[in-house]
Amino acid sequence: QVQLVESGGGLVQAGGSLRLSCAASGRTFSSNHMGWFRQAPGKEREFVAAISWSGGATYYADFVKGRFTISRDNAKNTVYLQMDSLKPEDTAVYYCAAAGRSWGLSHGSSYDYWGQGTQVTVSS
Image 1 (cartoon, helix red, strand yellow):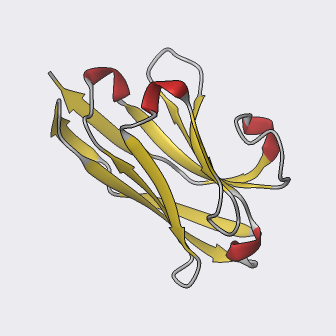
Image 2: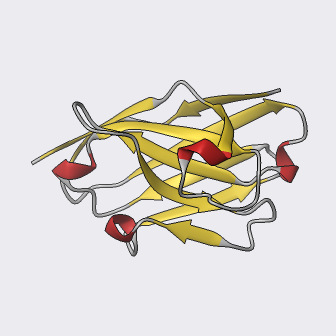
């Protein structure tokens, strides 16, 4: 079992920044690839970013490339999502997740454990 708790969400103006954190506990965190997803009201959940267990590989959805950065600190059992140049369309609940496999990381079905989510609201 892996327990995930997100934090760092909030209200920010367009063009601003937020850093989300996801603290993991339970079984060995450092062996899991990790991902961030988001879900806006009335929309399906969508992939945002993923990072390999070592942090050596990262993957991003096209709509966040150049604006968001995923990273992890295995010593702290934490994965981060630095979000810069935020836009109103980034408003959503953001979820972190721990993958159960090493492929298909842009698909929610690849993840076995999910956090409860943190709200990000970007005002125009």
